[in-house]
Image (cartoon, rainbow, N blue to C red):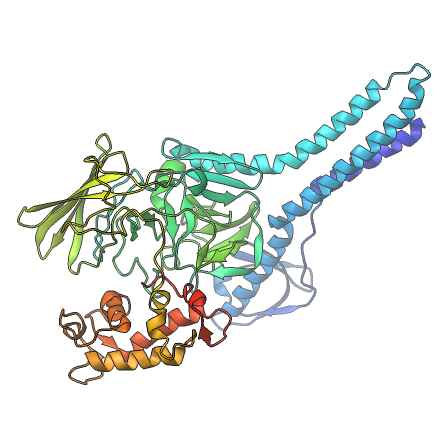
Length: 583
């Protein structure tokens, strides 16, 4: 029996070592390839070995090894190398293999438990002969414990690493983790000044957000590469796609109209951020300034698929030249995204597995507005920002037509905010806006009132403090747009409304609408489509405010096609709720 037990022990140890260390080998290219140079010089016939940094290693038929700079090869060969290298790295280093390893470790654990039972059974027989079973049982228990620790090691290592990256900001963020996710709590407000330098502004200011509890950010601890990644160039125009290590969300560089580069449009401040319609501050380009705090070789954020986002340079101090269309590449420790100075600036989508719902990563925290969203203020430029954390107050200063104006607010600590709007003449207008408490219940103002909020003119607003999202424009006006009232909205019905409304606004019949034709109070057309043009002109009009029928048609069709996910050619009211963020 003794030799038999020894064999079992050896088998168990060998099996454990195998699942712990084994990994698939590299995929080698078996055929000879002709490598061509971009300058048109003679080509080289050689086998591909591997790529290393900005070079590629080849081996000729005579056995000699050649090193070529990738930049000297034609584009087709460079893309071939990138695709081949990514495939090899996915086999060797992809986090998806971690799950396979965990399964193998689980099998090992089951094997050890079985072995322990088999080992203890003959010992029980010996027990009746006066022998002790405790040494053997103890050894079996020890081996089982080792297997359990090995199973848990992966999760603990991943969580510890992410925690280390967020720790420089532990006075601003809180974190925790379970077996699957790393959770980050923050208020979304960074330490640096905000809003300065913005030239295209919708009169929003930074308000702390309740990203805590069930409304926390979450990062997958075991990210896996997706078979069908999500490209941010044509998706994810709502919500965040990553989280900076200071607890500030990072959004798609293209805003919710699906075409405007926020950086080029002048909508971002000196640090690459601005406020959304809920007064929620977020970045749209890489917050590389964080490297001054965390160091150049550490992540500045994590994408919501779990893969890290680094700055402009890799571990060699150089800007990577072989990034894929998602601004990432495989490295020895797995896939990682990099920041770039040109589009897409941050991760160009999600290379890892995520769930997308209503054109955003789901789930993710929700910002909580405390007042109605603002309208674009043409000609305004933000020139100053100040804060007093002891008084929970902030001030944003802006120039309009060469004159200084400002918005100041104080957080009363009970969910209400006192706003003071100061115009160029020094005239002040005060307003109190009511938000929601952390438990979701409405607050009351200090005078005991129960107003939901008021704008600077004192008008009641049911929008302020409401967490319920407004319906997309098509859904909100579905009944009016459904011309034949059959419960289905056809694209042809929308086109008829466009023709009718455009013709009504185009008073001089020149085939285009100028601002004076559609923005006046006495506009000749009263309809849902007319309201859409007036309320959203800045999202599809030319820089001078001119609207063509084609630009209007494209904006409407884009919303319609986004809602028509089944390509049915008709929408129900439920389908229309998926039509996008224009409202």
